[in-house]
Amino acid sequence: MQVLWGEQRRVGLWRRLWLALMEGERALGLDIPDAALTQLRAHLDDADLDKAAEYERRLRHDVMAHIHHLGDQAPAARPFIHLGATSAYVTDNADLILMREAMQLLLGRIGALLVAMGKVARRYRALPCLAYTHFQAAQLTTVGKRMTLWMQDFALDAEELLNRISTLRFRGVKGTTGTQASFLELFEGDHAKVAELDERVSRVMGFDHILAVTGQTYTRKLDAQALAVLSGIAQSAAKFATDLRLLQHEGELLEPFESEQVGSSAMPYKRNPMRAERMTGLARFVIELEGNAWHTAAAQWLERTLDDSANRRLVIPEAFLATDALLVLATNVAAGLEIREKTIAQHVTGAIPYLATERLLMRGVKAGGDRQQLHEVIRAQSLDSAPSDTLLERLARTSEFKRLGVKATADELDPAAYVGRAPQQVDEFLDRVLPKLLRSIQAAAPSAAAAEVEV
Image (cartoon, rainbow, N blue to C red):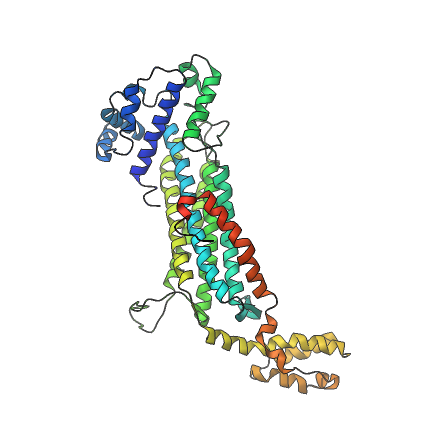
């Protein structure tokens, strides 16, 4: 991701865009010599950023600086570089290419994360654990089912990325204010050639969809839509990290901890969830950047304004870099999760008597009892300070339940009887939902996903 958003990569895209424009113009009849194209092709990736910076200090214009530098390297191409174009031709189109490739990289990251989480979910598909509402013990679920809840959030993010990648539109060849007037002049009023040039360049740069109309720039709603997806990924990562921090406090699930890792400079016994804390911090940063992009889209002036330029050069790369870091962290954590089964079992054992009271209530009503009266008896006994393992015995001794002849049986204290369809839900998610999604990820981002994702 760092290489993708680096200056060398960006300038390389500008040069490819200039080449695609020249090739298209020549194919449609402009007199551009072979030497111009040959020399330009020879210098796609060898820009000297220091020499370009010297031009920019004089010209105070980054695109013109690189046009002059490329002209020095490819003198036969100098008269034709940027012919008919405006700066946004290279800057905006390059941004769209970079965002698409960055989203493909993130798809691969999410695929790797889902695979790592899926392994944990499969292994612990049926391990009962406490489920929490309001961070208070509620009913039982399984560790595997909880993993699939986190996975589902990231799966939804992957679907959003897939949609954005497949529908992202290119700015194309639109001219100074989007009217294509300069190209109409070059082709002596031939509207068909201007339209074909737009399509040719877009196809060469790998885009099937082109914005039908633009001002000088493409609509900044595209940036806002992309950052909305990144914000969604950050939300999922923050949820995963926050849940893990809570469970680490309970001693049930712990993030990886290296053999020589230090938790605290003052308290050597501490094991802080530093990876999860880093994730929540980065997530907050990405989530806030989404609003910045919406403001930029809303504050455009007519065909274009320059006040978005410096802002976008910071916000867009940083959003992608931070999101990439989030997914790297999340995958590292998921792959190294420590599941403390004994602690989980202890917590389950302490809660089982309370969970069994719902069945007692149902049987009491069937035996002729008053539901509301029995509910009050259970409520009062449950809130009593007596140990939880005596709750069912105490209820059996109450006059209300004793009169009805209702009490708990031994099989009602088996945790597996309280997890519902959680194990089956894990299987359905891993066997039906996940493989299909991973195949879609591999199809949309083969180079990004191939090394990281196996169905």
